[in-house]
Image 1 (tube, one colour):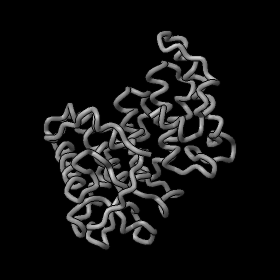
Image 2: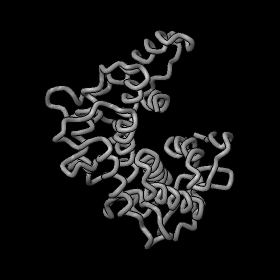
Image 3: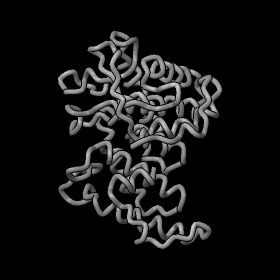
Length: 273
């Protein structure tokens, strides 16, 4: 997640950092510099700004990924500098429905956008990130809310299943079923299964992976293609290959989930960008 964020914000000039990978103090110092630089883009904790939002040109999902990186930063370094601002942002963007469908995003929100925030909430639960106040939604409940909404959006009417990219039928892209939306749901379902030991989540993860294979979004050689058009009955794939961070993250998890019936060779973790 942190490497992804470095690319996302253009913080990739490694010559600016001194790092000894064998020295814990050096790693912490370098990570602190990266986190500080990343947060220089964020204004949501300033007077008159909206918690959880990044300024243009950054998108809402990118903010969700950023706060996930900060949770990783806290977990690996023990530095709680950004914990309060992370909690504030996540709870604000959870919205009144406590499901990451805030009014400021509802008109343009996609399943993939929502999944990034759901995954960040799940990371908080998995890592023992400090709990919100009792009157606020808890991290696990937020991730479960995202899962429940997306499971309800499962679309058997076209292509035999899968999720549409856009949530609203008024948005361009509503007829597109993209891999990152499928991968986000798969990630949340598989990890909720591991975290709660609830077989229902595993079943949904298996169902999603099987559907992606059935329409060709995941090839026999584990390439992950961009998406497919429901208006063409998902018979025509967009073969663009991207760095599918969510699906790749789950590949490692899949090896430890025999219920899925899939194992992924280490060589499959390579992807084109």
